Length: 203
Image 1 (cartoon, rainbow, N blue to C red):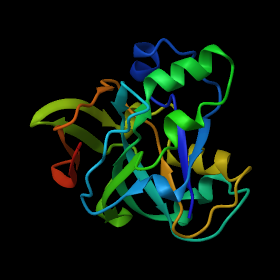
Image 2: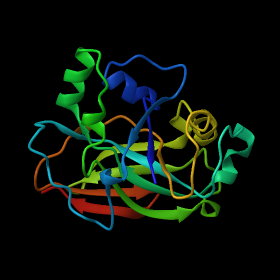
Image 3: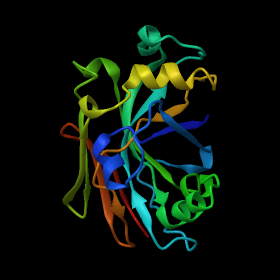
Image 4: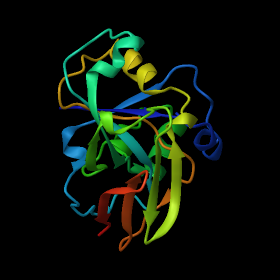
């Protein structure tokens, strides 16, 4: 399986990082070694002093497809979950300043914790799904799919031009504003609506 991730998909997050607003989805990949499941602890790497949390809704691809038209995109995922796109912000800024790719800042081991998934048919409106992140019991990030620049259909139609989607692939759909540094000892809890689907510690 592969992880396809979307950057700069919420306007307020773009503003907080002082990035340019994209006309097309910003896409990067993470390997399967980035995944953490079942509440496994995230071990803070020694190579970064500034790991940021980015909570995101995650689509689980249910069948193979490429060159998918937007109106058919809903046929290619059957579950929605929540995850964290951990980012080594100091490494990312160093790479960006030199015009270099920044995979090492996004795709390192354990950089994609994922929680539980909910069937798509549990959601009345895919363009009105609220989600949020607590750290040590405090609300740090909250978002709603209504705030996305590119919705689920846009994302699947776009990325499937370049990558064949396969069953079991995960698509991270972007993070809202409120990203920040995590520290050893922090407990992260991710919610879709009022359901807690993600719970782990930083060690």
